[in-house]
Image: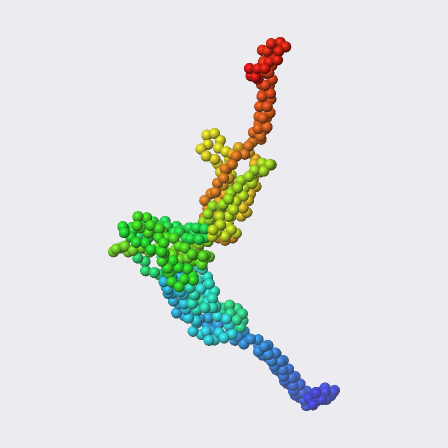
Length: 429
């Protein structure tokens, strides 16, 4: 209708006053109609855009758009961190309670990160666990430090790990006596993987009549045990021998050497041992040395046996040359370190006498370190080439000399006999 009025007005060749007013009214109505149409189109477009946006948002996980309040405020740390001493010579129990809002983590995995060390250590040891109680070892002569935090990961965090703040705790055994009263030069050797022998010396401030006792514990014992085989010096305990420790191998063996004296407080010694790093085998057995026709030296031996695992041994072989004039003793030189029990050595010298010795220790596949065994030693004689040639010439020279001597004596006897008469005198006249 508006369009028709506009065309009719425009078709009039002469625009009078009424025609002009009609044209203005029609223009205004037309412009108003176009504005309404544009606004309607914009509303429709925004409706479509809004609907698509809402659909996309609801297709996502709710927490991706609207994070839970506990993520906005941070994950709560564990509660009531405690350290207790069960009397196991340094193995302490660490216990805590879960965060107060743990019930809201139904679709997330809750773990804990535990870090611990002795005061003065540079690095922290780390354990990840889902448990609320764990037992770890410390040196009781120093303060134990522990810290724990909550780790949260799963659908509630969009598989991103969220960490809480740390909570801290410390533990210190009340120390008694002065440091100089503690035993000194404490030393242990695990002989043939069969028995452990530990020795010590009294502390500098230890009074006369002091009594020492050694206590030990490892995982598998219900409680700490006391040594029942002491090494004594003039009635004073200065060492201990522990048998049947195979269950303690590759575990922490915790030891305390305590002391008591009348009216005197003495400082106890706490230490942790690893038996496989203290092993000392017996010397190798059945060392045999032989020389081949090509003058190659062959050395063979057998493992020491007893409790030492043969596959855990490595050997060092040394060779000594014959002493030169003016030398006090032979100079030993290492020629091999190996796990095999045989070795062939090329002789590049002309020595007449050489010695070979072999010793063993725990290899790197069974321990971080260990003690060398004592040396097993074998000496032997080898003739030089010149000596072999001389040994061949001597019989020849002796044979020729004997023949010459016999012919000489026979000739002398013939000269002394009368002409034409045979001589019956014995050889040698």
